Length: 146
Length: 305
Image (cartoon, rainbow over all chains, first blue to last red; front, top):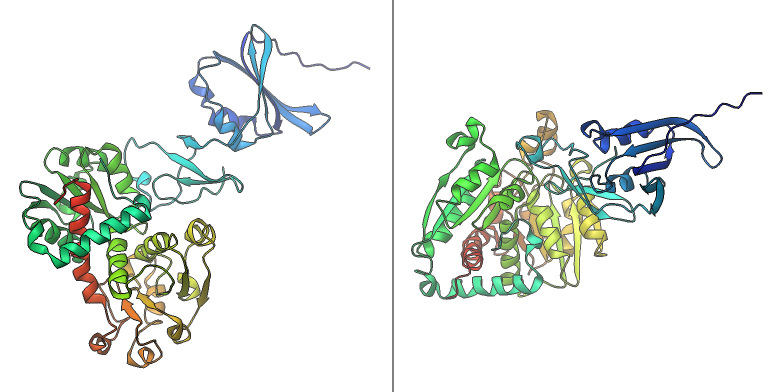
């Protein structure tokens, strides 16, 4: 029997995001604005996982200071973030819920000033950590999910 | 530099100072008559208002200052598509302080991010109306002699009524406060107000459908108008607007020292016959609104008299 193995090359500097819920890697691609970065990104969908059954993995080759990973804590705090320097894992970051989320999610309240004001940042504040509740900085409307 | 965007921008201690200043202004108006000479208040009203705009303007004029501004979006550059941020940066060059009303929620927060003068939120959509709250607090303080140990009934549109939300947020910080919410199911207090203020501060409350049921328990009855402009559909408005009408009969059920407040304008939720009842305090409330806005302008401009 031939064992099928998928090989994706090592990265010199950047991030490996592991244990992403299967199927969510494209969401993360979007929320991290990776389309705007001129860097090498590998997305592995539906990889086999003993713990999760299947999972997604992302490898992002970029300087580690250019990316704000806080949003990952909001999307799924179970994601493992490995920080790579010189082809070695130098840190495994524990994700926490970010206190603010800026220009990632949008307020859906049609009465909110963000619906008409040009050039205004979309900012959400963590108002209840226990229940993972974020509210729009301007109208205080609760955000009901990605 | 300070702004007033939410009723929680002032601590309980700062509010006590502000209310005390307002009380001194009421007693000694001549002492403050020239305290803002040379200062200009801009009233930026993107939405129509009688009381709030005139009250701010009267407050500044009573202090010896001048006023300028617009009273509808049509009379401003908003009609040309100018943003709130650009408008406030422009107005900052003309005036020393501004009061802003805008139909969109959070507009005043946007304004204070770019403003170089103090911004008073004079109402942002269905969100906050802090100067009305200051008025309400001064009225309660003056009539009852305290802001603690009170059962406050809030009646009518508790869902869209911004004055109600702001008043709840301010009152939960005092001890011994208890609320009775009197509204139809469709117009109950929204979830965020319940969660952020009432439950967070562990405030006892009950919800009732009929005004008669609540009357005997109350120290203060805060009536609100069912506002047509907050509804998406006219049929719902017509069906609900007459549910909660205060009249002489219902007043008979209330305590002798209960007071009725209303942010005004009223439509028909308080019968005219109630006006002659000594417990009807809504026009006194209007007068207190001027005193408290005078105190607010002095405080934000950091003028001591």
